[in-house]
Image 1 (tube, rainbow, N blue to C red):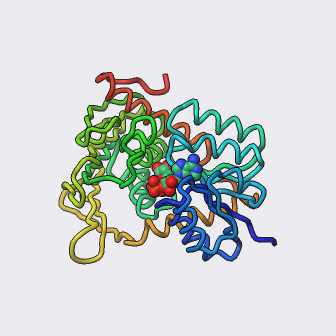
Image 2 (cartoon, rainbow, N blue to C red):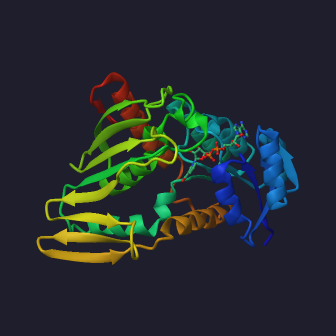
Length: 329
Ligand SMILES: NC(=O)c1ccc[n+]([C@@H]2O[C@H](COP(=O)([O-])OP(=O)(O)OC[C@H]3O[C@@H](n4cnc5c(N)ncnc54)[C@H](O)[C@@H]3O)[C@@H](O)[C@H]2O)c1
């Protein structure tokens, strides 16, 4: 079978993660990169030995079968929609888009052309997240559950992450993984409430706390900051609480990481693969190659991208109006 010709749209941080994986894949030929910042495209092309480099993604279209869209979130829709309209298989990084309208443009392009679309919800491939979700699904800590995720650090480097109309801040960009996961695990959401602020004075909220209640009664609580000074981090909590027990995680410190299921005096330890996330990135790209070759449907497609985006938009709206926002009604 001929090699799948893949182009990268964007030569930033996550594009390198995907290119490192795809450059080792015998089914793939990495043929080009497009980045508006010419030196970035040039450095990327020389690092991976790519034949084509451009400032505009449309220049790559004649040379590729499939594309990785890894540019700032508010720009996903123009690139993803035109690549889909040109019949190219598209892997679009999460969040699918910055607005519901942009997301619709991508969905419309996909349904018009029938070309495959995969959305970058890498946690879907993460063995650690799968393992703890299985404990919850199996009813071992009872129901409903409360999933609490607390973390604080300086956030990603690029400035667009902190502009409301571009990246939307952590309650869109980072937490969209949690929203997607919770929608899979708990089912449809009922309401969201968020109070947030910006420590860094940017247009997007970078610090705050969001609660999402699901129709099942399960709850997701996220208290995040991407507003701390460089190289500074706060404490973190990652746990799932239920009426019959608690799931807690030990990822740092001495010894191999694990999570534990605590019930009364009984504590059961389950090991965590420290490389689970990097293996998840590999599994995600392996799936994309198969998706692009028509061998399988994506685990996370356009509808999943929209569902997680709609929940993120409800969280952001709640933070803006300082009221509970109903979801999906
Ligand atoms: N799934 C994950 O775990 C994960 C992790 C990081 C980032 N992401 C997502 O990937 C996307 C990119 O993030 P990043 O951290 O790599 O960003 P980045 O800022 O590191 O890189 C973005 C690159 O896109 C280029 N660019 C901007 N506009 C462009 C355009 N119109 N055409 C071509 N290139 C353009 C920039 O010059 C830059 O080199 C975002 O949507 C982000 O949310 C996902």
